[in-house]
Length: 381
Image (cartoon, rainbow, N blue to C red; front, side, top):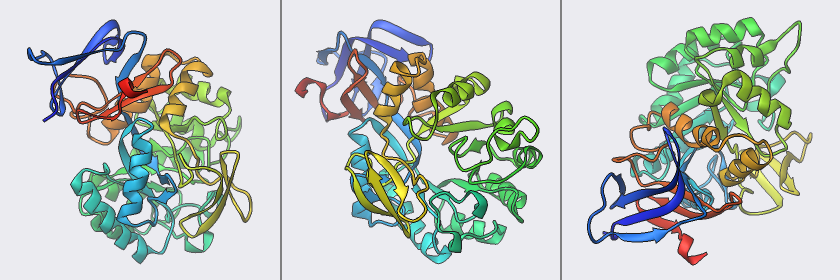
C-alpha cells in the first residue's frame, strides 16, 4: 500500500466552503481525518485541491467509444477522461438496435461490476424524431415500458439513467417503471410542451438531459420544457459548458433559476475528446470533428462534444465567472448525489474515496488522484 500522504498548503474546497492553507490527508485509498506519523507531506501552496470530477453523461474519448466499443476501447476512454480529472464516469450509449443495446449493456455491466465505470446511461432509442440530434431516426421508437425494462434488465443492476422523450406514447409509464427500479428518468431529445414536461416530472423524472439542447427553445407564449425543468426543485439540469453547446447567457440563466445545487456539468463527449480532429462513428452515425467541434457528416447536427471536465471547470471559473464552490458542486457533488454515490465520492471528506484534482492558480489541471494513487502526479509536472 502506498504511504499516507498529507496534501498541504493548498486552497481546499470542502462542502462547507474553501479553506485557505488547507490540507487533505490520504490514508490508503481513503481520505482520513488524522495523519499517521510516517505520512509524506506534499506542499501544494498556490494550488487548488477539489474533489474528483463525476461525469453523468459521456460517450467516449481518446479515440474510443463507450457506445459500441470493446471493453478495451471503453477502458481507453475511461483512462483518457481520468487524465483530465474525471475520476467517476457513467458510460452513455446512443440509439441503436434494441438487441445490440442489450448485449452491449451486458458488457458495460461487467465493467461497472469491476468499478471501471459507475454505471450505464441509455440515451435513446426512446426519443423524439423531431429532436433527434445525432441519433439515427430509423432506429428511434416510442418508449414501450416492456422494451425499457429489457434494457434495464440487461444492465444487471448497473443502469443509472435513461433519456426519454416523455411526451411519446408510453413515456409516462416508462418514467414510472424507471423510478420503481431506481433508474434516473431524464427528459431529453424531446418535443414536449410545458404541460407535458410537468407531467413527466410528476411521474418521477429528475434530470434534464443537456438542457437547452435537443428540445424546443424557451418561448414567451409556449415556454416548453426548458421553463418547466428550470423551475421545478425536483430537477437537476445537465449543462455542456464547452462554449459551443451553450451561449454564456444561457448558462447564467440556468444557474440563476436552478441554483448551483441543481446543476450538473457533463461532457456529452464522443470519441474525439482528448484525441483530435478527424472522422469518427457515434453509434451508426458518421461524425466530422473540426476545430474541436463534432458534427454529423450528413445534416451537420452537433454530435456530442470533445469536452473534458477540466476544460469545463476552467471555463466556468475564468469566463463564466462562477464561484469555485458552485463549480465544484456542479462538477462533483451534484452528479455524485444523483448517482447515489455521495457516500463515496463527490466531496473531500474523511471516509470517502481519495479522488481529487489539483489545479494551479490559473485553474489548469496539474494533478489527479484516484483512490489514493496519483494518476497525474503534480510533482512531476
